[in-house]
Amino acid sequence: MRIAILVACLWLATSPLWGKIAFYSTRDGNSEIYTMHSDGSGQTRLTFNATRDNAPSWSPNGRQIAFHSSRHDDNDPHTAEENTEIYVMDADGGNQRRLTHYTGLDTCPDWHPDGSQIAFTSTRDGNFNIYVMDTDGSNVKQVTDLKFAARPRWSPDGKRIAFEGYMGGNQRNIYVINANGTAPFRVSKPRPKAHMFLGDWSPDGKQVLYKETVNANLANSFAVIATLNLVGQRKVKHWDRLLVPRMPFQTTTFSADGKSILFAGKKDNDWNIYRFRLVDHALIQLTDTPGSDKTPHEWNPRLSVRPQRLLPLFWGEIKSNRLRH
Image 1: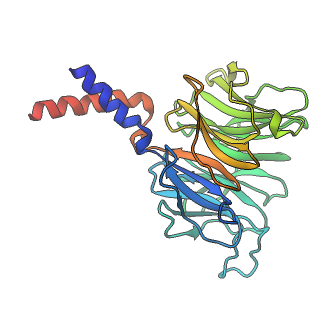
Image 2: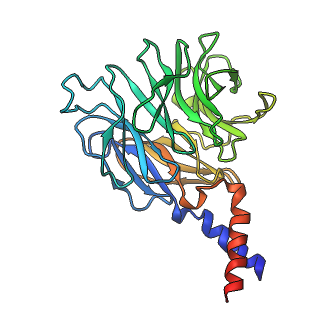
Image 3: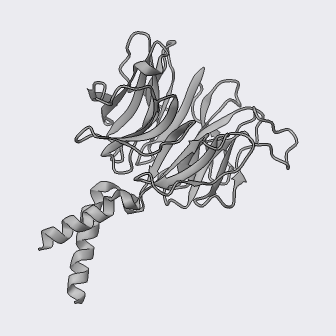
């Protein structure tokens, strides 16, 4: 009986019914931020602007969403469409506020796992590089100093940052560095005429998901998972080209529980968001609208602790409840 209750509680803890996915969509004629339940229902528009809002990222507690926007700021006459900045808003779209103030590009925010910092890409030094700042926009620090480094993603323990970039060559690869920018090492497996685009870390911090695109052809793209040995700072295994059904795809990321990947796939000239389950290779279409739905990022309140901690957490609740009755 206890086992049945435990299984039921774990199912409730990881059920897609609890999760939310943030993404951007052009369905209303402009790139705006939306959210939906993890099964694709309840699609809700959060931003309403004449210019582009993109790259939403959930805060660890799910109360806020960071994103970048090229909107005009009435309080800053120097802003223009090409001046992309980092913004943050409440999870319902309210209380939108600007964090960065720089003439250029500040893009692709990602929250530190403890919610204290945001990593992002910026051209403020003349090249695309990785920066971090406090969540109020203060205390900005440069992390990388390369000719190109972009799309930072914190490791689940907050000790490292993965990114895509060029290091010692002209081929875009995936790298991991310490949070202070030291000890870089390459994660992706180089292939002729292919460039690599970062997805995300797995929730347990042991794997990195990325996409390789051959000859700049999105129809010739493949999802790859690299399993890491972070103690020795080396890869131990690649899942060579996951069996995702062939279609042009972009902006791939792990689901909140790590059991599937989310990505934007193109079918009939429209980009929509799909879930690909790793255990049985089932493909589930989550959105179906004209235009482009991309950059999915999933948050699940029942997974706000690491997955491996769910078992003692819920087993403790079961025992506590049994003793009360």
